[in-house]
Image (cartoon, rainbow, N blue to C red; front, side, top):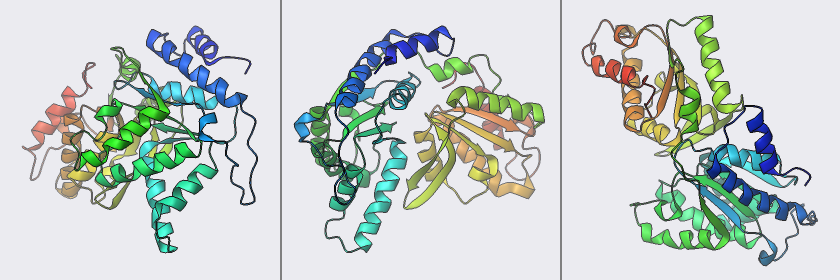
Length: 359
């Protein structure tokens, strides 16, 4: 390891790509130590079934659970760590997407007749990994809560190192959830196998990047589209992956997601038969939403307009930052037809959400 993460961070700060933050630098020292431990281990051999031949659990370093308020730079630090970690057996994935993969694998294992579906799924996951990096870990679903305990125990026993980011301290995961007492052993398992580090501090770096920026673009012109694209690139570095949310057995797919920011077209979210539960799940999974091409609303697209009202309410209550391109200013979006007067509240909220201090 020729260049440390701290040195890379300092170079990025010198180039103006980020602002030095003492809390981030403290977290980097832990990630540097973990990186050195992982890279110092000889590359594992593979068995007959192409799985990694594991060392005893005692040889694996402790992982890292990095938590703190929204916009503190947790995802950026984890991305820096994974990108510069010189091992092949690593995976970086958003927690929701990871759990979606696990649910799909469990379904297949049951179809294949597995008596205990989780055992082969955990084994298959562990076979390909030395490091699992999970971004935005949060548990709000009883099914996920029951799965993660056994799954993580199996991964830890196999020597897989887990790095996770979260807005919540471990003790607050699945807080007030149904049958939470059954989930508590997982928190103990997490603490035994991962170092818990709080990324303290008041700053929200997503807000910093948006400070003073235009966030509501109208009318929808080439210039407006370019402005939205610049914001997306600033938030994500131009990177994106899909994110699938499971809501009451249904899949809600965000095709562009990175580090808590999502980008979608109006008809992606309001042109489909989505309801309050879907929008609440979305608002819980993202901290910034870029919503493009909001059309003029009225009688001709009344159902889409109703869904838009519900979406804005969910984003407003969750304090999600909203970036829009729209056919008209908020007060002129809905000018005729049933629901016009009720839309006044939505217009007011859209105005409030444009304030620099929102979110």
